[in-house]
Picture 1 (cartoon, rainbow, N blue to C red):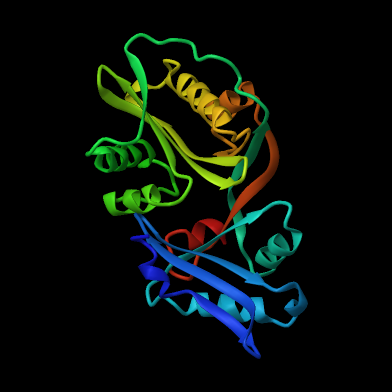
Picture 2: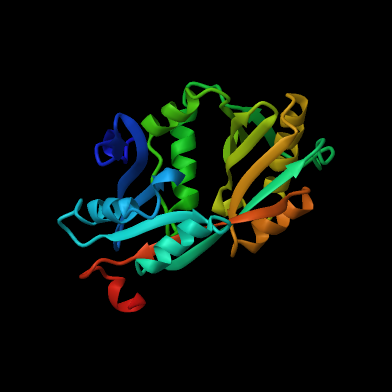
Length: 263
């Protein structure tokens, strides 16, 4: 993707040509802070040998400017949460991981002047990028979506996408990826801030779930911020239940604008 420098900050640890640990590390510049997002995975047979701590040390050395370190970790992964807490990280966000099984929840309630159409028109990558950035720009973890990024997603196997339009103007979208046979994930469901509260998200979700069920994708997963109560309520009414939680951890570096707030 455009923001991870082609993986140039990634690292692997090998022993006798065998892979034992992996580090992914991506700098995400944004105001008023810079974030470096990382993930460390160590083979179970090589844990408790300081490999994780050494890779974290590598992450710390990757920026000359003050940067806040960020890592996402499932609540159920106790070894990961213990590692982050041990190294001084604190939790800043929680995301519900939700899932539903079974047929479509029913037919969508018709809305006047609302049409749902699949991705495919010539200018759709530009439309997707603009709507994504306008809708997510106030989120604390906002990462701009470029047209090039949209093209990368579009070319991935299992890509599915729908626009919601009013009078021919896109006011929402749903991006879905296929995870495995019979399983899909809703990567993003968005309604333009100026068109919320009118049932567009509910209608779009119902249409998408029906289309996925019709394609044999009866198991659908998604992630939603735990404090986004309207979205959580929408998904629960559609039959989704919480199966885990993704926790975002931060460690402000010395000199970071956040350091004094979280010390």
